[in-house]
Length: 92
Image: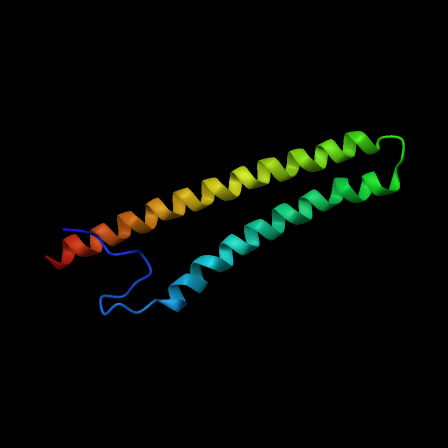
C-alpha cells in the first residue's frame, strides 16, 4: 500500500497548521545560526588586522549551522514518519 505525503489529509487537502507548526522551530534554528554567524562577521568588518581569520570563522559557523539544520530536518522527518506509521497501525 503506497503511503501518503506527511502533510496531506485523508481527504487530500494540505494541512497548513501542521506545516506552520513544523516551520516555526526550523526558522528559529536558522535564525540562531545566522545570529551566531553575524558576530565574527561584525568583528571582521571592524578589525582589519585579523579580517581573514574572522571571515573564515564566519564561514565555519555557517557550515556547521547548515549541518545542524540538515540534521534537524532529517531527524524530524524520521520522527514524523514513525508517528504516522504508529497512527496508521493503531487505526487497523
